[in-house]
Length: 435
Ligand code: BGC
Image (cartoon, rainbow, N blue to C red; front, side, top):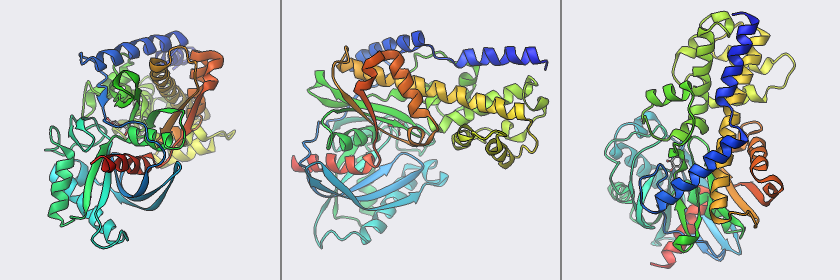
């Protein structure tokens, strides 16, 4: 491909991924109307799920067990709430989730969970004969009618276990625990990971009013004044008023849940690498990359991960040796400097769009409760993308500045680790006290 034509191709590509300031304002407007429709029970891409969780006082106390299901690992934690906004994770164990657990049946998945809990409880010194309360962080859209039960609406991310959709996941857990003979636990609370993250931070910071996850999947929740301050789980990953590129359409079409989780597919860690792969494959086809020599990695779905993108983004060496190393691992032996520069650009375009779309969604949530941005807000944020992807949070901050000007300073984006552990303990404590 000639130099001019290549430049032209690249310009078009950049334009298709660009989210302008006007574009962000339009997204925020649509986001507000989808929030309102969802709250009013009208058809909307935002489910706006009531969670029956309210602001913690900070005085909640005691020892609790927390479960965290929804990412790459399943975790069991023992958490101590000390009151005065202080808490500690006393013990935590990670269990690797395999395809056999997440993509077969609900029985296999919950059986595995119950056995992991049994192992964990064997080492938990809770006092003989004592019952422990458990908070279950379950990071999927769930329809709740109370804090301690909820029906799985549908799986997202890579989860597919059959026989769980439409069922109460607390009942599934209780049954599995019963089968394993674990009787000393009461499942007191079921919560989304965004809710755990929000509550964990709100326990120590009164200004915290939004919880966000930017990891394998993405979502947010907030305190809704018109519902008496109840936390609403937005399920923002499903927002669909967004301008899509042909790559987004191809990714969606080939995914396990076509037509759903459109924002998530533009933003979250499970998909960014795949988007980059699709763009690169197209550039190879157009002979704008690797002189048109097909590299096998670009022909295999999900062969290029967000983690690799992240390493390419972090590479600031002059000769792009870090990028060359990533490519070598992927089986691309010879890459010209301009090929590596182009790949870096592709990663940048995709992650910048993700950061700007998520910052816009965050801005929309903040202005729902504070339209003039007259107060200080803390957004509790967790997830590998936010924590680890180079300059992701800085790009979000830039976008907030474009939207809010000086008032962007009123937004603190606080990395909140272990929300799904500590937050689950806090929600379980409140629920257990009101039993
Ligand atoms: C789920 C949300 C969850 C988010 C982050 C999404 O796929 O639908 O419930 O909060 O991932 O884990």
